[in-house]
Length: 185
Image (cartoon, rainbow, N blue to C red):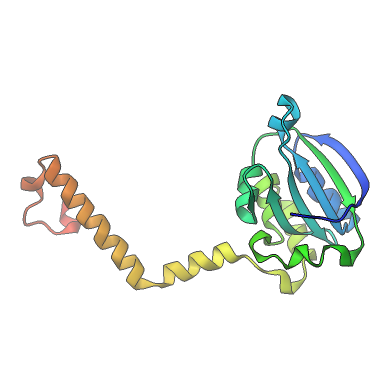
């Protein structure tokens, strides 16, 4: 991910990346944070991840070590501290191209949930996030999956067949003969 060179506004080693998220929110930062987790910090590695912000609200996440973006990148970053965090400020239009990359986008409150586990920061972020930024695609995908009864039934049938196959392998078929699934429990 290519980002414009920004003005460094803060550089710290912190135990919790929530400090950087809270600082960005308090400053209403438009820019980005470069995070170096403990393995890079303590072992001299070059692992870096980036979170971008628009008016203090997280927009994108990218982990250079795993080359993954979005919510997956947050999962890669959710490791115990310390972290070196650098916050950079850029003009508001400088991130427009980067922010138009759907596979890197994160729901506004997700970094606070994943990285900080701070309910107050999650609520503050939700309260300040624009209404049009409710882009929690992961939850929407799960909801869509659960609404698809055919897929659920297919998974249940596949699991039932696998259980019966294993029961036969292990010699349990006599115990199961003639019983319904609920009677087998």
